[in-house]
Length: 354
Image (cartoon, rainbow, N blue to C red; front, side):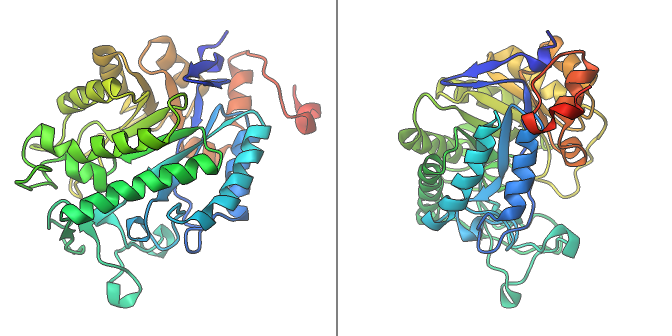
């Protein structure tokens, strides 16, 4: 059997294969609500054979959105349409997951096809927040440093979002602590220059992430997994690095986190990242080997054999695929054919199976 199509049981859920639809922002919401675009986008990847379909980064608060068009889960009214989408995903054999996020200083931006620049509060944007008053890069908004009340609100927002996620039928939660968004901003000494309990030392910089994890786990069933996405390195001297990522992952494992979705970068605007096929797999491998926690590999993984090799070499346990699944929603079905592994096709499509 191709390793890519071996089932994986985590807690009470079983993924039928190791292919994960990585969360990808669609910038297609109004006031945070899901709509027909999300049903078709996510539903087609379930029909296409993925084992786990993770909804894009869902903002836990309005100010936590990357853009005004972000999907959200900050109010109960968001639940109904998400539940409808998840019923469809499960009907077609995939497990529905959600990524919970707060953009921090990288919030209040236009959609990428509208330039992606930060929107001034006077022009329909909003004031951004962060651990410290350091802008993401030159020309971007200076954030307001969160005080203790602001930090407590972030924790409460994540916790309430987790409750709504359960009501919406999600079976996996992924906490977004990567790509330069708020929780990553607290982790990195390049964006966090605080001197209180949430800054300076490693233990203090990881404190907010652990408080979010602990509070989510109080409202999220123990049998359903919690993932954490991290950027394993800032790719910048003096920043967050793989050694700290290994230490963090070990502690997260002890706290009951099931898997580390291992990405990199995003926190420093001028970082030089050596992008090439599979360039982040090394980090998933190192974290897996040194901590024993399950890891997900992500980053320019575009081929069936490439994904299979990562798994066969025990470099990761799941393969998170983004852009290739934008190009081909049926990548899992095509990958099975390439790897000479027989999988069930949707009944409606079986006449096209070769």
